[in-house]
Length: 200
Length: 200
DNA sequence: GTGCATAAATGCAGAAACTGCAATAAGCTG
DNA sequence: CAGCTTATTGCAGTTTCTGCATTTATGCAC
Image 1 (cartoon, each protein chain N blue to C red):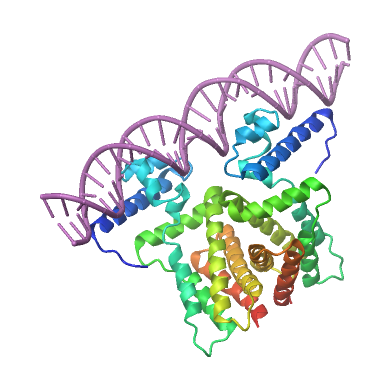
Image 2: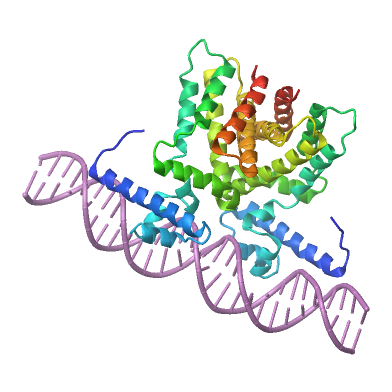
């Protein structure tokens, strides 16, 4: 979490951004599968080897900055006010993840492309699901720590699993149906409300 | 679902089994990552090319026969008796997936190795999660068809997502904690009970 | 049984993802 | 300036996975 400010770090982030933007553009153009890492690196004017210095795998270039939302949710749980009950905290945390960030053009374009490709590209779908899983584990852990007398580890996991499962399943159903972003968000909120009942 | 009985089919299943058993043995021995597909094929006395004729990817050899459970759950939903309500059907379907099959040594060994490796091998974990997702989609669809006047597509997805999410999350938490299979199953059942409340 | 269609298995060549290692170059630190 | 750190690079190599043509074995019709 420490912000390095040096010139070296600046350049590093530059090449990282260049890679992301190049990948984004190429994927839009030719489709995910038919773009090679070599091409991305080429378009970003770096060596192919450098790509893997920034991203563990080809898919990860599309999952950049995904952690931010999870961090928000984690903070929402950790910073619970004493009067807040379990359901309120959980709902607030999930709201953080559902809320559209999209502050700048790049990240919104990235998010849009990501959700489009997540349904059609198996490799990406798989990676995304993995992220969900680790996020779930983190959420469960902090939730259990926030309510140590009320939740054991297993129950916390089940709870988080239920909420995340419901929300993401309804989202993917809405997406598959061709809903607009606003409708998708609506579906997610309803799913959350549906499950929130079992929290009491 | 048609049972082909010819000699040709028999031999095909033989090589398939040989591949599975060879893979199983090698994975136990040397670990998943350090076993190549070429080695597996070699141990099964077939060509490497043949491996990919039977399995789409290296991971899939460990996910053989996974569909069976899902099919059971699907049937449990489709064959609902008229007097059964939504919660009963859902619980019965999930029970089908939780129940340990393990009729023969091979499949139980396979299941055990699979759950062990699912936590440590990212590629396998990813594939497994993908299976869950498609299974969820199928479950949601048949559930919605079984209760067409009670559930819309989104709600059905959310419901199934919640149940599967809770059950699998609690299972993975129990596994991570080092629980015995029986305890894991217990955790899954409790998670299901927890979520079943939101079904009403 | 002979001939033909079908399908499994094979071999080969190659694309693409990804890794290890050693070398370079550029920023940082005293 | 001197020395350390670190991003980047090039190269060689492994592994997964695919396309294609070929062989081999089975099934089927006659």
